[in-house]
Length: 249
Image (cartoon, rainbow, N blue to C red; front, side):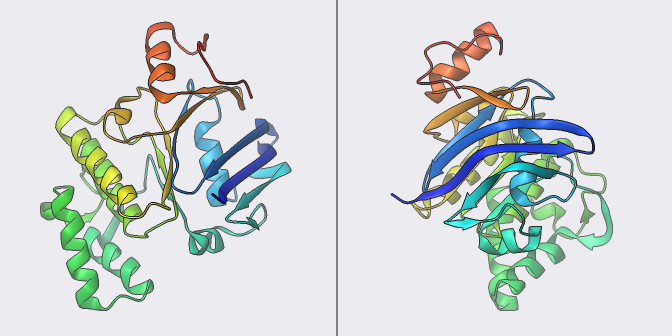
């Protein structure tokens, strides 16, 4: 199977501070991986770098996506190639409703207004967001409502590589089941779709089947292995110790 993402010796700076140091990671089409690590380890920086956030500067190495070197491509071109990032703390936008943004995204992708409206209704039912569709974007939303709304906006972009930053953080059990089912359903619709999911707790792994898990510490991949084994060891021992790994990065 052709590799979808290849990250080679990647170093990333934010201002004068180096956050990621010589990171190597690869994934094939159809794979879902978990990315774990303590706060400040560089996980979110990594996803923001992949999507092309200009605040994060690649100082060395390269990123290949679907055979294309995207290391210097602007964000909009990366999105067109099939990357999409669900933000952990999206901005509140007054005067723009969730329905309006969702439908405009789909219309930009070539859907008719009617097709866009029907698809938005479908995802809003799956994620139980019907009552929020005509409210200002993220204004007055609870933490769980923000997570579900941001996930819907991301899924509607139909990315080849879905990137999620802590979709299970601060989400109650009922809403986590909704989020997990939506992610799993999206990935299963097309065997070529892939995902990178940042998680501190590993709870999302109960609902979304990952094939690999990586642990990042101080901007480097320090351990990789089976998701269930790695998550259970971290829950028991913390991030200081990685047991039964398949290899070190």
